[in-house]
Length: 590
Image (cartoon, rainbow, N blue to C red; front, side, top):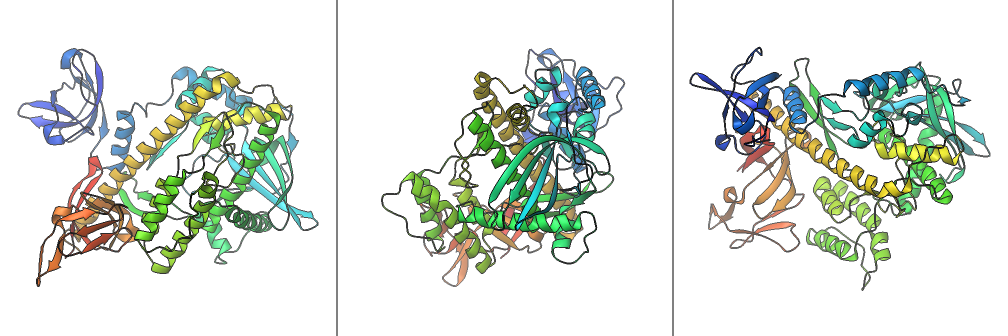
């Protein structure tokens, strides 16, 4: 965020001492060496050089003053807070919105008729650090070899009236943004982590999807209704995984329902793969922080059986809701993932072949339906190849994802190719996604519980808005991950890793060089410039001219034929870390 002459502006800046003056330079924009520095006044704020501060810049860059100090640039939590502020977030909600949320929380959704499910064994499964719990599950035998699963979702529509100022603010935000050690919520705390959160031992209004499945995972019946539930346990993914692995004993009353839910989820997963759903996992970093806000560790969060359990049941509920809304022709927002273009699938097959990954034969010419049917098998080939080789899963998975169109929101059902779903919507997270609230209101109208479905004429613009906000949140989350990873790397390097040989793996290639994920669990990522690469030749290491192949999967030395390939192991050393830009420059380990 740079200062613009002629207009007052808020600047998130790093304070520096220049002689007798304290100056402010933009914290995140551009090159720090070339940043414009503005002299600032403190007034009643205590601040010093090296602080991150919010600065109010007067007209034409005059009269700049420090409004408040955010923290220090070596403290990850402070930098993440500053990043939110730099993007116009992190200031909370206006007092009238907070007041309306508190009033809505006090009402508690008691005005609606509800089925009493408080005696039904119910539990939530979420990350260990989650603060809002918008979905819970129950499971029990239904006879004839069938299993009944209840998916309970927080009844946000009972608290947030359509068209109210609170609803308009949720619509404007469109989603919650989750950054390491910070969250920009869609709804105020009184709702998001209190009245709408399905916390253990507390009665909560919910919207329940009651689904029955046979042993193959085929859905045999479904009912929707408003309910009153009470969660018996707040479980996290790690604990559930220990139970599923036989390393920890399940407790009652949730032990038996958990086992049944797992059996259903496994059957659903197998059936989805048969229908052509993608078999790809995109691991994400998960950071640990100390009490002072410093990042202390990180791990790549892979999808485990406990994650898949919740994922499959939520997908089943979302599909059931989308199917009903489509049959009733009620206005809603579908989650649409269009089928890939044949040219993109052909390109993917060429890329995989260039890396000697076995692929099924492609028909000629390739139709769009054939291309869509091939993506699932290609994803399974990638997963098998990566398991067999012991590396390459991230790079090959990224190739696959880039061959697909992005999923978006739309008022028209176009199916979800990635999940192999004929109709799909987001219903299971109304605390943190506005499209889910739209679908709740449509569902409640479909079952005669409420007449609050959104106006169909407004949905095209709303779909575009929600899709754009989702993309903005995703980019911001990636930027924050990169910055926090760099701050962690700096702490690790101070501990003695400068110059160390670090194991890595090539996860991306551009003509300027390979991107290498490195370190423990390959948490960090940096660029290894081609100018630093050398190839063996004539008995000595020497400079080489590298070019990227047509498939963009291999960098090859033109004189020696040496190569750097996507997915290959490659050891590196760290040359430079620019934490605020989220950038790491690497050198070959030799």
